[in-house]
Amino acid sequence: MGRQMRRRSVVPGLAGLAALGFGVSHWSGPAYAVKGSWEGAPTTLKDGQYDSVLKGLEPAVSLPPITFKREGLALSVEDGRLNADYQTKFDADKTFQLRVNDEQDWRAGLSTADASLRVRGHGPSLDNLFWEASQSGSAEGRDVQLDFNSNKEYNLTVAQERLGELLGAELAARFRATNDGVTGRFDAHRELPGHAALSYSVENPVGVYDLARSAHVGELAVPVAGGKAGLKLVHENSVQGYHGSYTRDVSGGNADVRVSYKNDALGYNVSYARSLGDVLPVDAGVHVGVDDAGVYGKLSAHRSVSQDLGADYEARARFELGGDSGPELAHSLKLSNKLGYAQLLHGSSGSPRLRVGYEFDA
Image (cartoon, rainbow, N blue to C red; front, top):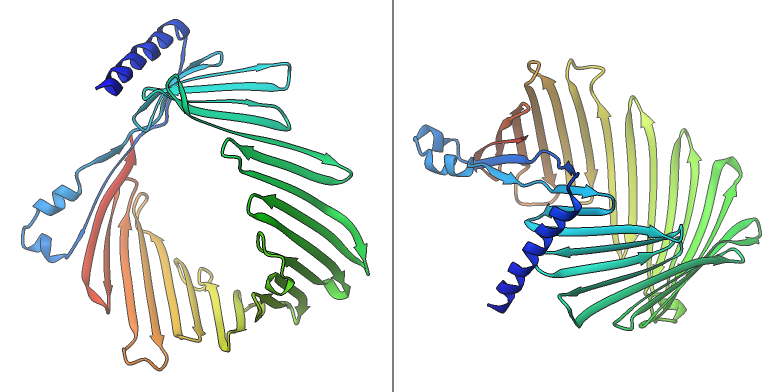
């Protein structure tokens, strides 16, 4: 009961702010979205069961934010909440912000180019007060940022992107200290002849200082036969992982080969993707491949039926190698315009489904 009375006391206060501060006001607010949808078996329409269809197509309105503002003051409605905002600048580089809503929740902030203090609470009581502060700066090529809050949590980050060179490799480092410990990352990168590149990084988990449990990553990228080959070695928590890749443009499409080995398991994925717009009278594309689980493929196409009506078709297939089940097939046809759409979906795992809906801005 007391909370309801407090809410009533805030709303007239916000209304008073509007009356005093918005004699000449600016209103802004985007259009709001109206939408509805239904999905079910096509036989529902054939059998005349329109109740569920009409129920699903009932309009759902997404109310837009509405704002009145003038000279640093603003009154707005967002997500069903009435908010009052105030913002001002002083001393050329300092900004003060304050927001209060009709639930008596408030937040305030003071910021400069390199520091900020944010406070939030509820009503006049300071019992639930929470604050957080941040300060950043640079010294001798190092970027330093300190974040801390009223819960006595802190996060200190020191980064140096140009640490120097060693054997032709550019070095960089980043360290972060928290209540739970310290983590650090060291990077080395070197450009090699023939547009190749070699990189290495090592990073320890927060509070874990055993080098064997750190993450070591080495990568080599090399142009090969008109494509790009890559080799990546990962050592983390005493586990080795190997990853290889090769990509190349082939016959107007892109071929992609990926191989990995980790925990005594071999994984691979060989795929080819190509647009078919140059050989078909529609905007279409195909993607086929094989991986360690099976063979897969996808075909998609789009065509304008009329000025405002478009048609989209998509077919997917996958066949698991060594499995007892047959191939998984699925395809869909969708007709849509600016106001709505109708889509028919069918696959080997279920009966046909019809999906209809609409969405527009009002």
